[in-house]
Picture 1 (cartoon, rainbow, N blue to C red):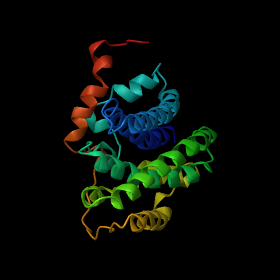
Picture 2: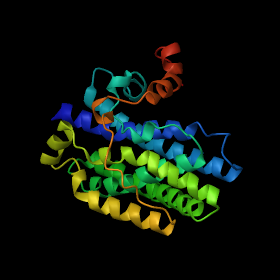
Picture 3: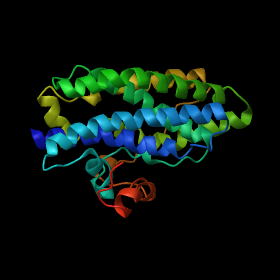
Length: 250
């Protein structure tokens, strides 16, 4: 069970780490000071959540493994984050669309994870829900604001939703570790809230005068460690200090 639990934790933690890094790239580059600070704060929330998960994972791993070892010293194929969260910041609409599509999923996941028989995971979920509720409100507001804005902002948001939609089906793919933890009453059966996810997304997109993409072709692979070309570049930035100065501590 310990090995499956370790893998299950990584499946959740890696999403927050990689998305947090993506948002962190906007620090000092946001469209306005207020939005710049908001995106940076969301990034810090996600790093804080991932840190809690990695501390637990390191404890399970043993052999003096630290949270930094788990978070920063794996190879690209050892990360099991969703393809969605590693997509680059092409423009502000793209960043908000990516955030929105993940946030709707994230809040549903945490609401169920809060019921986990694993008290540590349940506690992390309970603490994170308040933060992610704000994340969802922020990203939803921007989807609606841009969708209902000018013709240019509407088109950019629709194009972003269309481009990212191909990564959304992977949200509900189960790994072997997922199935094992569900059987133990520890993990969340993500397939059970797929309808709720699609309903919430459709509701917000309708308010934003945007269309739900009809594309039925989806990409997958992130949960198995098969990523897009973007993740390698992201990890080279994320891991630079740890790999340049091994065993460095603050």
